[in-house]
Image 1 (cartoon, rainbow, N blue to C red):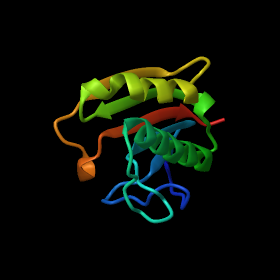
Image 2 (tube, rainbow, N blue to C red):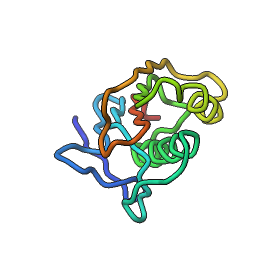
Image 3 (cartoon, helix red, strand yellow):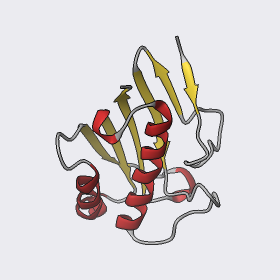
Image 4 (cartoon, rainbow, N blue to C red):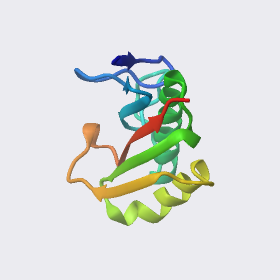
Amino acid sequence: MRETVSTDKAPKAIGPYSQAVIWNGIAYLSGQIPLNPATNQMLEGDIAAQTERVLENLKAVLEACGASLQSVLKTTVFLKDMGDFPKMNEVYGRYFATNPPARSTVQAARLPRDVSVEIDAIAAVM
């Protein structure tokens, strides 16, 4: 059975999509950008601060799904500038310190609201 998931602890969807969809015990999370869920305003700061906000948003959606960072199977990281990879990777590594998920990282010509980073995820629901 298909279940859509939404939480106020992450930014509201800014289009016709769900924060996450669960199907057969797998949660498919939409990409998160560095929006503060309380204000829906863009987080100011460098790529490290923005990556941390994005991962906190993902964490909130994962928890609403009954999943966690430890149950993430795959992520996709979209960067505005691949030159930001080392700083993004350092922050990402703190969130996925052990048994990290599979990951793709790509440079995108343009991301929603001209942010520097967006990350989506697929996770097992525990």
